[in-house]
Image (cartoon, rainbow, N blue to C red):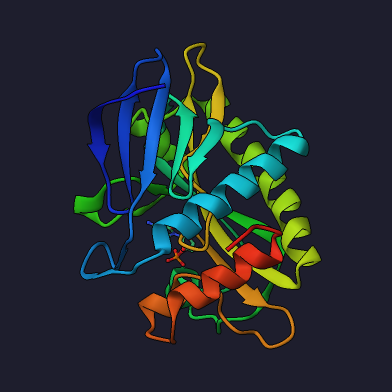
Length: 237
Ligand code: C5P
């Protein structure tokens, strides 16, 4: 497999075409960004950790019957994925109040949520990814009504499975963001990444934050936190 031209460079990853139709080459970068790119830093090792953690989680999800775009890990910081057309919606699932929900609703961080909340955000950096409703999704023609139902159903299933994985390693899955794509047949497939960059992960005992909030809130060493997640998930550092 050969890496071909650069297709897209985002804040955390580079996507390349390959010599195989429908397969993309992903390179995880060492850059950390927060607050829609306002806070930025190079953190050596972050790309490697997110690539390995995403690989482990996508493999575990596959075993649990949840398909994703993931094909295989290539190196510490690279993986192959199926090419999909990304649905421009960031799907967030919340089990414990934190972050923007705490601010928006005036609820203290750490309160448990009885029925997990699924939220949609418009994937648009210029607008700062605003929260949107199903009616906005229809109005902006981001997805069909049927696809919205699929997105919500898949998000809840992924949440159930991920809660279990993290429970087993003594970590609370507070919330996370996922993205989906349409494959060549129009099927909705889990895509992008699932890593401490896109999840809030709190140690069950100590409540220590083991995710990107360490960077956002200057709470210490980011790679130490990510290494801990990787090693508890059974990965090699
Ligand atoms: O900031 P907020 O509380 O809405 O974030 C909810 C979850 O979604 C967090 O786990 C955060 O890391 C993730 N997220 C993300 N990318 C964004 C916005 C949020 O991964 N653009």
